[in-house]
Length: 147
Image 1 (cartoon, rainbow, N blue to C red):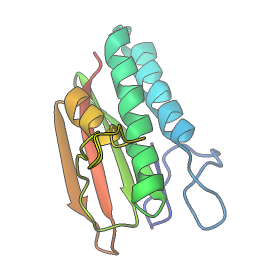
Image 2 (cartoon, helix red, strand yellow):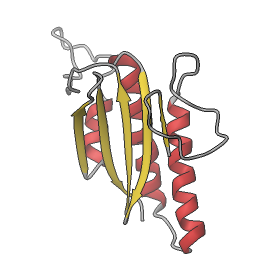
Image 3 (cartoon, rainbow, N blue to C red):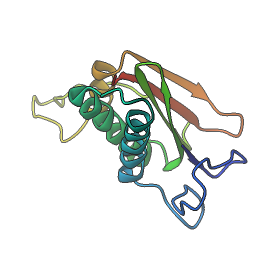
Image 4 (cartoon, helix red, strand yellow):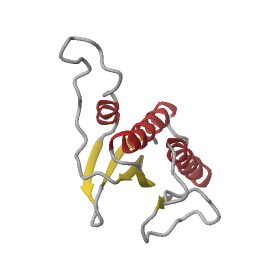
């Protein structure tokens, strides 16, 4: 299930949710795509999913999309694919900057109000890849076991 403002096709006809100039993708759109993909696989194969794995994938989807919005200049697209026992969640944004882990405490020893998203993604995913996009920006893909 792909949503973006590039020339890639949208593989869910009739779904109006897209990341474009006039319509924005939200973290909920990415989470819903994860749910639909997992439910579709279960319906097609009769194979159950791991509830904890699905929760992990939903949290990773939220963190990747929120990070794209907060730190990447906005989410420009997302893709959810199933591969064997895993779900691949990819989120694209406008920034070429690589994600970084931030110390949860500032220079005065006070707890920061953020900076936990990237460590959560890296902790829950079995693999995380960051790739630059030809038109600028990047795509972050996390592989999370679900089945």
